[in-house]
Each structure stands twice: as C-alpha cells, then as structure tokens.
Image 1: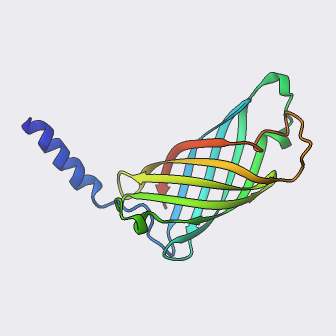
Image 2: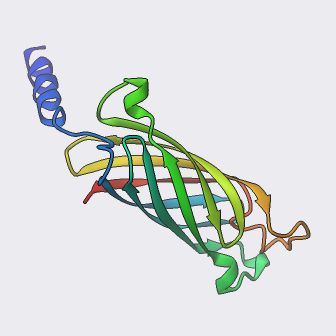
Image 3: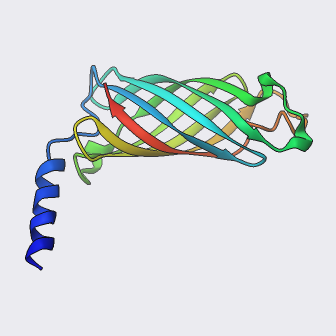
Length: 162
C-alpha cells in the first residue's frame, strides 16, 4: 500500500507541471492514426494559439490502408484542412493538463467540425483524440472512393508542445 501511495504521489508531482493549452503563442504538434469506413491512415496536425482560448492550425491525413475494392487514387487518399479551435479546457476547470477543443475545419473535401481532447502527462508530451464530421460536402454524388474523408472519422495519437 505504501508503494502505491508513493508512486501516485510521484506521478502527481511529475505530471503536475504540464499544461494542455497555454493561450497566445502556444504551439502543438500531433501525430496519430486516422480511422474511418474503408480506410485507416496517419494524421498530422499543428495548432498555434492566437488568444487565451483560440487556436488556428492545419491538419493533414493520408490513408495508407484503403479497401481494395475502392481503387482509391492519391487525391482520394489525402485531405488537408485549415482549422479553428476553441480551447475550453481552462473554462471547464477539469484539470490544467486537460484540454477540450471543439472546432471548425475547411478542407479539400468538405467543411466540417471536430471535437478534440488532449491530456498532457509532462510539459512536452500528451495524448489526443479527435472526432471529425463533415457539415457540408462539396459534392453530393460521391463515389465510394470519394466518400473517404467525407464521413465521420476518429483520430488518436500523441500530442507535443513545441
């Protein structure tokens, strides 16, 4: 029991100096996996804090594994997005290591929204997850390969303070 209390106290002290979103000038880089119907890939994103609770950024996803029957070309496997986040972790006062960020994105495939969360274990390293969905697709008559990135997707991975 003493060992468990010691480890818990040590972890609380070690992780206590981290902060999920610092506001203006904050830099976040994230790398993770992207999951969606008929494909999985890699997601990279960068966010820059422009205010106490606002950040702007870019996100890119490339699908490495796509259902063979789709015969997806490069332009159907890739998506790049400009994004806006409202970082509300400090408003919710859950934990200074936790950030919840709803946002909007404008990409090559659609206009959409996302809900993300990140938790930092140290000052430089954390984990994140994002749920993404399109609000308005640029075309309503999509082929199955064009449905890639035009559907609900999930990202999960590592987040870094730069």
